[in-house]
Structure formats: structure tokens, C-alpha cells
Image (cartoon, rainbow, N blue to C red):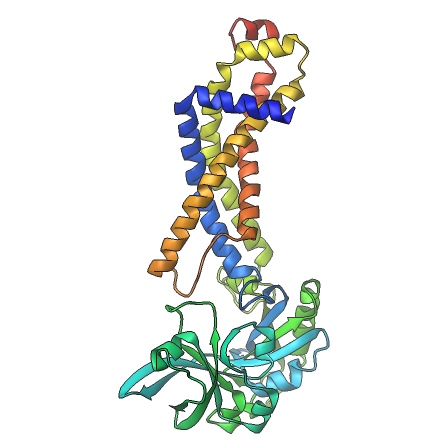
Length: 411
């Protein structure tokens, strides 16, 4: 039966080439936009590349303390991470990471402006950076305060060209660091020039004595299903922080975010709320994408209806020989979905070409976009929904035709 539907669909669409071309153009343009949005969202929020554990990662980057009439918000101090977050049992791994510090490095009589991050050895276990040369610094390196440094490929290329970087010396902030590793962070040559060093080599030893500072905590849950449990435990820990001045600051809060939580908070008027509003933002995105798809789908309804009206005699014959309304609706939907899937294949080619151009010109910095299996799957799903939405009304209307009127060519 399906084979017959496909053969009939191909003949119908080949018969009216102009209608088919217009239909394809409308579907392709719609799908290309939706596929680009899907690719950006998939790259930003789905586990991939360095962030292969993204669905298990929760970050804590804000520490809030509340007084009677005031609120103070800052980054985390290492003392807070060490005393209140590292004992959490529902986390498999916990790392302390600073923000990126701008630094200047003198090399071959020129100054390079770079970014430097201080962290621990667990950082390399949570994030899967691809090691190109050398090794990551170990827990022993951190404990001993060894001045080791890891470069990404952007820095290595800028400083040393094609020469090996391992063993080279870098003077950063008055300290002599030795390059022990080069990693590919997946951002390409246009990415941020970044390097990492053990947190014990920070210029001030006072970093470990304060609850407030330049750190954030990265916690990896034991599984994706336990992320919500981890966030609740972080929240409870945050409420139990004892400030050095408990009279002035009796209450405290830690803000725990997944990657999508951080994105959702950008739409909130109050970033101090524990609830990021991620569910509402996700629902809004889905609704907006559906509405964007609905507009061209409604335009295609009229085109499909006009095309099907020409086949009223065919419908009358089929109904006269006992074809049910369900069979006719199924046939017309199958034809419309086949056309939509053909447009989907064209859309994948167009989208991939557009994304390659975006990557090449650096239109979206530090991002490499492409169509992977996830985007492909979402694209096919969107296409089938589009085919059903744009075809169900004409199919149902034509299936309701009275056989006598249909045979006369009247609808």
C-alpha cells in the first residue's frame, strides 16, 4: 500500500511542476531557518566535544548573602568551594575554576594579549579536551604548586608556530611557567587564546581564605537523572554557609545552573531567584518555532487544496469502489509527507552549506556549527510535523466529498 502511495505521489507532483516547485521552495526556506536554530541550540546545550558531560554538569558561579536591608553578590572564594561544595555526596567530580584573567605575554619582541584560567586537576577529568602535545597537570602538580601551564592550540600557534611548545618557558605576571601541554578546545583558529595553570600558582595566597572571590565550582552529577538532586543539595549547602559577620549577613544562597539554566536566566528580571525559569523558556522556544512553521504551513494549505481539487474525479472513483475516509486521508498525508521529506533533504544540503559559510567567516565567534545525527533527527521530526500540519486539512476536506459530486468534478 505504501509503495502505491509513493508511486502515486511521484506522478501527481510530476504532473504539476509549478505547484511542486512552489511547495518545495516554501518548505525548504522554512526548514532551513528551523534547522539553523536547531543546530545552534544543539551546539550550545547538548553534550558534545569538550562538553561531552554537559548533561551532567552543574555550575555554581554566584554567592549571595542577605542582610536586613541589603544584598551582596559575588563569585565564589576557594574556601567556599573547598569547605561547602566539595563534601557534596551526590557529585561524582568537583572542580574549582577561576574566571579568565587578561594577561600579557612577551614573546619574540612582541606582546600577546591572552586569557589565563586557574584550576585544579579534576577540571581535565570533567571536560574532555583533546591533548595535542604533552600532558595535563596532575593533582601532585597542583598540591606542590608547580608552575606548569597548558595552552590551547590558538596560543601555541601564535607563540611558537609549527615548533613544539612543550618545555618552553612563559613569563606571566612575573612568574616563570613551563608549558607542559597543548590542547584543542574545539574552537578553531578564531577561538579565544586561553591557557590554564594550577590554582596554587595564583599570585595571592589569600585566595583560599575568603568565601568570596573569582572562582566558580563545576560539579558533575553521577548521571543526568541526578542533576536535579545535585542542584537541591547545592541549594541546601548554600543556606548553611556561615559568614564572617553572621549578624550583618544572616542568610546566604548559592545559584546552581546547568548550561540551559544560565541561558534561561538571561530572560529573568531577577537573577537571584533559585528557579531559573528554564522550563518556561524551553516551552516558549518550542511554541515560537511551531508558530514560525505554522505560517508557511497555512499558506501551503491553500496550494494543497487547489491541487487536490483537480483530483476530485479520482477521489469519486475511489470512494465508489469502497475506499474509506481514513484511507483517503492517509493517502493524501503520505503524499504531502513525501514531498516534505524531499524538501528536507534539500534543506540539509542548503543548511550545511550555510553553516560552513558561518564557520568560515566567523559570524558566530568561537562556535563550529554543523549537522550531526541529533540535528538530522530533529530535522526529520520537524519535517514530518510540517507535512502533517500543512496536509491534514486539505486531506480531510477532500476525503469528505460525496462520491456523486466528486465524479462530476464538483467540490
